Image 1: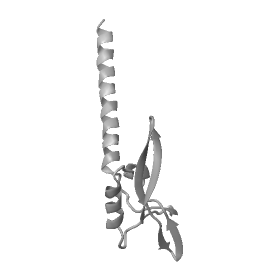
Image 2: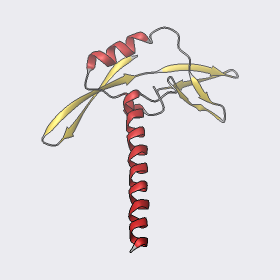
Image 3: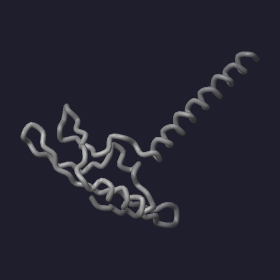
Image 4: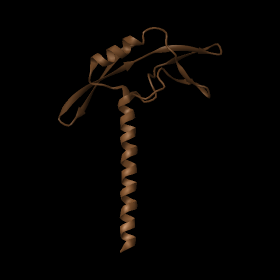
Length: 114
């Protein structure tokens, strides 16, 4: 595994993001497959902290488990979980949706009272 690098424009500056760059081989029913997907949501593992990604990459250098889609063995990932950063985005979106729904119900209740 290596550390990949991508520069993206954000406003008037370019920000450098680092991510795990992987390549692995696995065998299913005598057929060898190659995978390059680190996790389900690869952008969730992007970071501006190169040291964090280097540590992540170096911690997984030994043999690893590969998770394969049983319906399509060409689809595989090394990590089946979502990063903490991405999970917090999902929770924030869910909470925001709940708050908007509650506000809509309260607004509708006040309209009905008029």
